[in-house]
Image 1 (cartoon, one colour):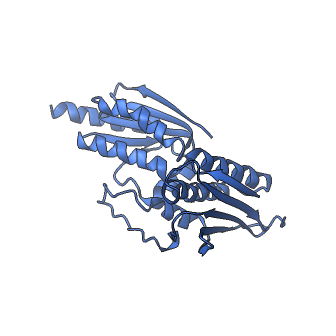
Image 2: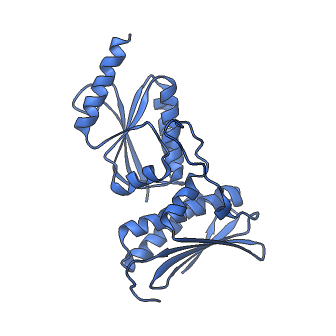
Image 3: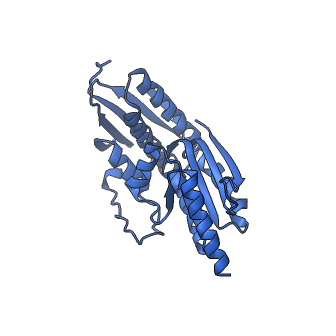
Length: 140
Length: 128
């Protein structure tokens, strides 16, 4: 399933809702689906707010694939080259109460996703998120 | 999923002066700006204790956590505090993963929160 979306927060959440329906229909556990939805929200928001600078005329693409053993989300945008797998996240400390929030999104994606793969293809950022599923329910 | 925001004063059994913000639905990149907008007049007032009741919050992302952090920082500057109650397991896990809000109070139920806020209120009164 592939979605072509405008660069708005509402469109990011439309993709998240499609993912949740897609996952429920395939009996993916709620906890797994929550993590996938969160990863898609974070990566989609990053595209909208940074790569495409919140310009609703710009578009990006989200593809969702279920292979039986995994659920894969692929995001494509034409923004400037940006590899989120190279982002370094500062480890917060107990007395670091006013830490800046930068990096929270990628921390969450790394927690919930098993494989994060970035490539630059013909002027596009291509981010592929793979979540292995505990119980195979058959490919499509 | 939309976000429903209810802002109430003194929701517990005791008059603690706290403002409670009940969130229902999804606090995400699309809905976080509305929460920030509705919190602005509350934070502009004299409130010191703000309690976020997350019993019906199903989804949260870093966009929502940034609003919590903004509120927490503003309250801290005036000697106040942001607290959280009734976190669903998936929401609590997000808090724990990014250690986003160190030092905030998280309560399992209203009784525990009431006791804490009443003690804080007594402490405020003794200091003034």
